[in-house]
Structures are given as C-alpha cells and as structure tokens.
Length: 201
Image (tube, rainbow, N blue to C red; front, side, top):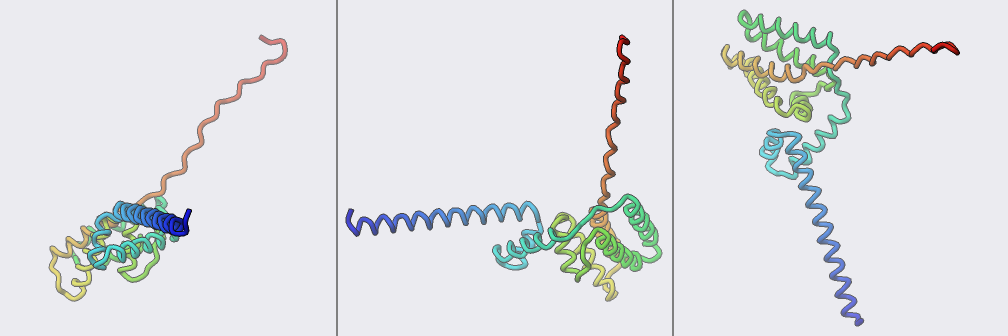
C-alpha cells in the first residue's frame, strides 16, 4: 500500500469518526430537547420566546431542573394540609368585604405553603422558576396572579381583576396542596398453627 493510499484511509477514518461524533451529539441534543419539552410543557416555549434562542433556553431550563433536584421538596403532613385548606377557605370568605386584603392574604399563604413544602424564598422570578420544574401547568397562574397583585398595590386594578387573581392563586394553591400518603399498614400475620403433641392425631 502506498503512502497516499494510507493517508487516504486515515483521512476517511477521521471523517467517519467525526460523522459518528456529530451524530451522537445531535441525538443527545434531540433527546435533551424532547425531555425538556415534556418536562416543562408551555414553559419551554415561553423560555425560548423570552430568551430568543433555543440553546440558551434549554441551558436555563436544564440548570433550573438541576437546582430544584437539589432541594428537598416534601408533601404536606395531613394536619398541615388541613390547616392550609382552612386558611384558604377563610380568606375566600373575606374577599367580598376586602378584595385587596384577600389577595394579599392569598399571596402570603402561597409563600407559606411553598416554604412548608421546602421551596426557598428568593425573589418572585426565582420562586416561579422553581415552581415551573414540578408544576409547569400552573406556573402561569402564579405569574398572572402576581402581575395583578403588583398592579393592585398601585391601585390600578378593579374588583373583577382581583377576583381573577385569587382564582389564579387558587389553581397554584390546589396544585401545591399535596398530602403525604399515610404509611401502609403491615399485613396481618396468620396465627401459627399450634403444635400437636406427640402421639395426638
């Protein structure tokens, strides 16, 4: 085999290796995209639109997913769930007399519930990002409610908008009100048959 033939074979081998590497990289990227789209749903599209670049959006969502995986998010004990549920019912009953006050209570109750579940209390955008990892279907409710609450603080909302904000908060509240399953009861053991005395039939 001549030197030129050897060089050609080496070149073909290098090109094949590059093609294989590119194929593997593209496959991994496609799988990551599919995973993030399934995990985040509409939040995936929102991130792409907001950042204007799919790769940047996927990087942000992946980092968000990793950050939340390091948290200890726990379901509520039944007693805590009952307490939060009663608090929500009470604030709803106060809405007619004080819509703005009920909305402020709803926002505070959501924060307390998140904290009890194990979410850190950063700024609003961080809280929404954390929620989006495990509850992507309701994070938009959180954003909508918060936007109305901010305008409400400036006196730029009416009663109907405040009512809608409380409804948005309720969607998130119900999603987060996850109760720890009770520990399974041990299966009853069959009583052991008494030993027969020798010679007894």
